[in-house]
Length: 431
Ligand code: SF4
Image (cartoon, rainbow, N blue to C red; front, side, top):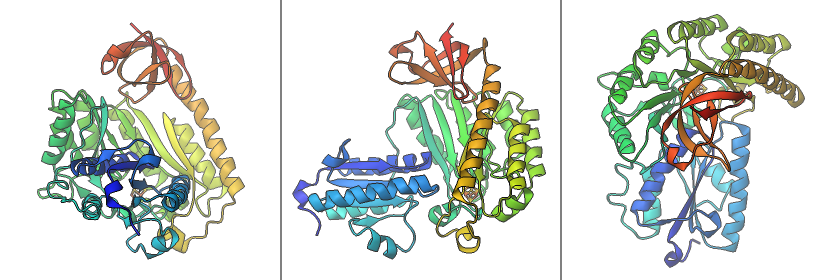
């Protein structure tokens, strides 16, 4: 049975996974806040717990299931209302409910209204006015803004289209309103998010594209920098690259996943391009945006990946020299085509060896690339502090630690001379 309702007054939201999940959680946060509930930073003290899950990688799924196990303990010891949302939630939740009986509500990604309405019902509150216009009241210098949800691509290894559905774009007006609100709260840099951000706007009437949106965001005076994530090689157009090059505030940093360097594996992944087509796209980026940084995503140990297929991926890493590689060992994702039809036949130790080889090679490449920054001056937007150092990013998204600045410099763009580098970051001094 659920709780003594008089005890319920606070909530805690636990988010696992990508920036899209963070953005979804921020909307739930606004809705619960509008209901009059109090945010509780310690999960153990919260009466209502919303767990926003990710199952794109095995490690994220393990984190979510581990936490659900802990919540079972809470539930047995105490009285709580537990909602689980995010990519773990399938259309049919019967199996999940049997596995995790401690959960009171299952809500698919973006079912924000369902979460707010159910919690309101449970507390005998009215949700009127609490489910519309959920614009997060954020005040960080850098913020993430979802512009298109879902994905139409159906790569064989990926669960996103099944859990987040087909692509649905927000209108330009809605996005601009949100970014202006952020800017009024002090935000200086926005990252426009989509699982396949380059396909933004094709589903709107009239159709628009990412270039149209970037031109409008560029006009917001308080916004100084604009980024976007994640691109698909088939949807990154010359028009988009030229738009990035022509606008002052668009950061020249491109995340273009290649996933495999082998044509045979790319076909089995149903990525829709060959290695040569991918490399041509990289050539276009380097030609039109010569100062851009390029990052990528790569899977090692996809079913059937032979040593020569893996070496094709290594060859792409050596040819392109990416600034960063998000590399993961293949793990089966329930519900995908690969899960249903392709045997996960690469042993774990081989996957681990390939992962290590990529990481070692990337360390060398990143150090080589970062060395080129030494003794040059870059504009860094200072947006955070670790224990003892302030940090920010270059236009190309390089992390830079800066000496001899203080809290009053947060939110400033500071000219910085780079005098130390590692494969993962740069360090420098204000000039
Ligand atoms: S394009 Fe990206 S999000 Fe879409 S199915 Fe492929 S890997 Fe998943």
